Image 1: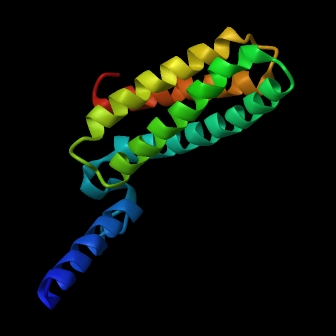
Image 2 (image 1 turned 120 degrees about the vertical axis):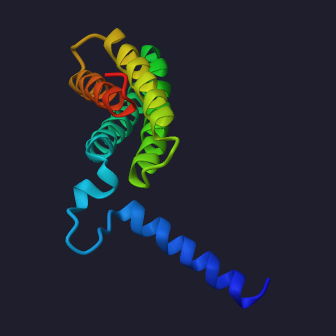
Image 3 (image 1 turned 45 degrees about the vertical axis):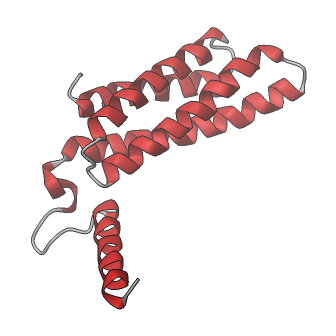
Length: 148
């Protein structure tokens, strides 16, 4: 590998980082970069959902450790949903050509997680909040994917 290959690779890396962090050109509004307002909204929604799922996952781990086995399914769905949200955030952050597919998959994961949380009933505040955030994220992801 020669110096040109290294410099070319670095330039591509900088371009990816610039797109992922939302650096706009002079005079351009950061949220409207690439004309993708839905992607910005989806990015925020997925971030909130991932945080809620990870919090709920930690709560469920504690419940399972205390012998409440009914939390196992919810625990697994929360962790998987958080992973889908992270993937969707990556796609939206860089306005990937795969963004619509990622958003649709994330919406399905959010629906499944919300359903698993709702099975536990509304008595658990943490789980009920996770279900609500997941439903909101699924709606936003469908809109971003063009299926809302």
